[in-house]
Every structure is written in C-alpha cells, then in structure tokens.
Image (cartoon, rainbow, N blue to C red; front, side, top):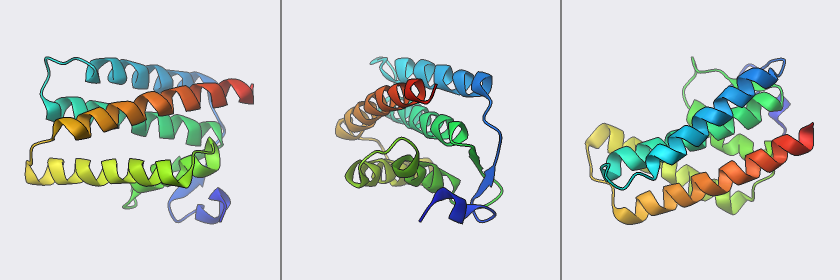
Length: 141
C-alpha cells in the first residue's frame, strides 16, 4: 500500500511548505526538551514526548506532500503508520510508537498514572524519531 491509496480516506495531498515544516520540527524539539524536565509529572512528560512524536510524524508526512484529514477518526494512527512510508522506520518501531499512542489514549481518557518505564520509552522513541526525521529531511534537499 502507498500513501496515495489513503487519499480521501485519511490523507489529502498538499504542496510541501518548508517554512511550516521547519516550524513543526522546531516545536517538536521544544516539546522533547520540555518532556526531559524531571520536575514534571510522568503524565505531563509522557504527553509532551508523545506530542513531539506526532509533530515529527506530521513534519515528515507534510514533507512528503500529504496531510492527515483531522476530521476523520484515527489521524494519530495514520501519522504513526505513515512513518514507514515517509522516513522508512522499521515496522517493529512503528508498532512501539503505536503502543505509545494507545497508552496515551488510556491515560487521557481514564486518568491512569503513567509508569516511569513508559516515560523512558516515549522519550527514547521521540529522540530516535527526531534524529531520523532530521536526517531524512536533510537528505530531501
């Protein structure tokens, strides 16, 4: 399956805007830096690291000429799954990112506490993705 197969279902085509993509990348970097602040609660750190992951996935999708249809359900899942096609992450890593998405949903809707291990994993994945997306974006120029 290609990203073109998702046009009208969960994606739309756009003209990549390098200025907007750079702003999203910078926002992800700020969120990751905030998520590393140990004085914050686990829930805030996890949510902020997860937000960085979403921003990085969004930047790579936009750089590829697509945007999620946020009016349709599942746009976070689409962003994560698109990373296999945009920056070429391994399916195993995408599965880990999707597990973090599910954890975030549980936390947001149930008020469950976030364990230290989940924060650590989310931070690890956000750092990895920042490096991957940054290298990939530079290779596109």
